[in-house]
Image (cartoon, rainbow, N blue to C red; front, side, top):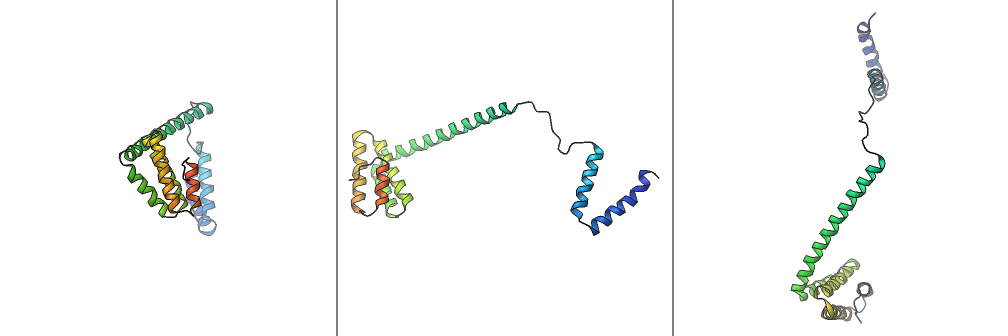
Length: 160
C-alpha cells in the first residue's frame, strides 16, 4: 500500500481524534509532524551580521539621540514659556495665584516653578525681587499652606 492509499485512513483517524480528544493537542502534534517531515526550522532565521556588543552600541546611540532630541524640545518649550513670562510678568503671577487657589500640592509645586521661571525670565536682582514679592504675597494671603511654602523654599524663593 502506498502513502496515497493510506492517506484517507490517516485523515479519518485524525478527524476521529479531533472530534473525540483534545483538538488543540491533535493540531499541535500534526504541526510538529509536518515540521519534522519538512526539515525546515520553526522560525526562518538569517545568519546574524552583528555581534551583541554592536547591537548594544547601536541601541545606546539611538537612546542618546532620543535623549538629545527630548532635551532640545524641553529647552525650546522653556524658552517659549520664559519669553511669554518676560512679555507679561503680571499674568504669570496671576496664574501662580490661581494654581495656589486650587489647594492641590501638585499645583503648589507648579506655582513655585512658575515663579522661579519668572525670576529666570526677568533675570538679575529685578527678577528675584519680583518673584520673591509674589511668593510673599501668596504666603501672606494663605498663611496655613505649608506645602506651598515648602514648594517655594525648594525653588529658592524667599517668601518670608
